[in-house]
Amino acid sequence: MKTIDIGSAQSSAPGIAKGTLNVGDLPDGSPVDIPVVIVRGASDGPTLWLHGCVHGNEYCGTYIIHEFVRGLDPAELAGTVVALPILNRTAFQKNQRMSPFEGMGGGDLNRCFPGRADGSVTEQMGHAVYTVLKLHADYLIDFHTAFSPDTRWALFADTGGAVSAKGLEIARAFGYRHTLPAPAGILGGSAMMAAAADGIPAFIVE
Image 1: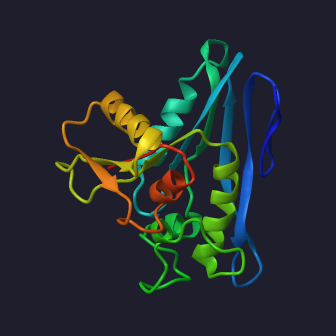
Image 2: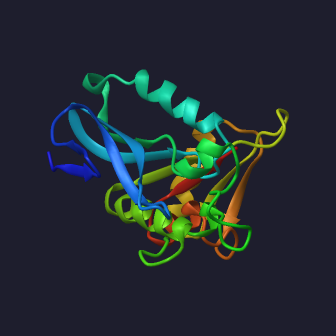
Image 3: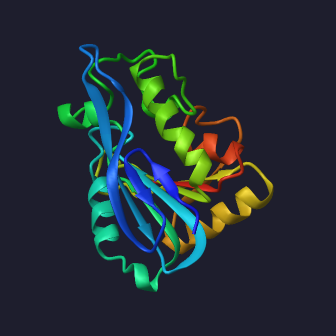
């Protein structure tokens, strides 16, 4: 098996590896590290990338990811699951949508992918996450949380070819009654559309 390195989490054999990924530094120089879990199956297969809390006050995906990962048995798994339960830690800690170090004019992490290494705090987060996502992910599922309990909807990247076909399969597997195809040109800067542009089928669930 090839080694998967994501920050301090390293996996080269079946089992569970945990660590953190540095996604930037605070204005006072303190590092911003986010949790990473890699679950490696007993046999090779595709890599499913899961992440949550792109927006810091959207906690549902974080809980879902933790519960899902706890229920995985590497011995029964073909392939790999990479889980990052909290992407925007600075916003998560303040229970708000965006980082407290950013404003409305560019602080939405889901409009900053693939990010910039020399950009703003949020752009640096996007760059750090997307660099390893692009390297390892075969599929992306991006968990968000709607603003009302009766809202349940989802989007898959519909940019054409295999990306669209696989995205539709993911959407059907989730079983949502209302799932919308997202064509190229909308949701610019989202992880979903950045991944699709790089040939990675992607799905957002609220």
